[in-house]
Length: 245
Ligand SMILES: Nc1ncnc2c1ncn2[C@@H]1O[C@H](COP(=O)(O)OP(=O)(O)OP(=O)(O)O)[C@@H](O)[C@H]1O
Ligand SMILES: [Mg+2]
Image (cartoon, rainbow, N blue to C red; front, side):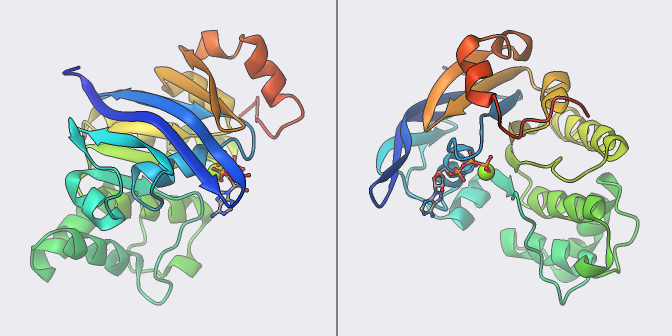
């Protein structure tokens, strides 16, 4: 068990009369990049929401570093070392990108403004954001994603939950994003659980892949093995999986 960083045990999530997750087990190893794939509505974002405390599961338990975190609030979970990059970035639009990241650092630690701003500039440089003084509505989608990533890194996570980081990016931006996520993993030593529809990105970067469909885990394994599983191919037929970057 020593190298298991995150464990989701039989997670169920019901919304009204609808079961979005039906007994999902997930184990994430310390330091790995785990791809979480599946068609629209499979329950991927819901599972991330349960891991970082946006939702409590209807049934089931979540453990991080061998401690149970089920039902804790997102800010508590963030302080324990789990950060989230959301599918739709939600920065503070009235603040500069630098102030967005500085605020996130100050929210998550007790450092003063000067130190927080210095760290924010380092993080923005790390993610390749060249316009820290701009506001979020003055920058490209790629830069918005970079700033969102820097905000997530503000809590110095051990585990980063990434939701559709590549969506809407062009092929060269996708390549840069792949390199950036790889650097987060290798240089910062952060484990990634990464939801993505852009298959070549997953194939190139994820060490293991888990496939959800209709709230059930239907496959798990190396990316090149998983995409050959009949149930996975059928689940994805007619969906918006992107096969070419
Ligand atoms: N807050 C909610 N209230 C009601 N139903 C919800 C809620 N959140 C998610 N659902 C439903 O749960 C199911 C799973 O949604 P989820 O967002 O987890 O899917 P997903 O796998 O992330 O899909 P996508 O690839 O489109 O982002 C969907 O049918 C969705 O409509
Ligand atoms: Mg989603």
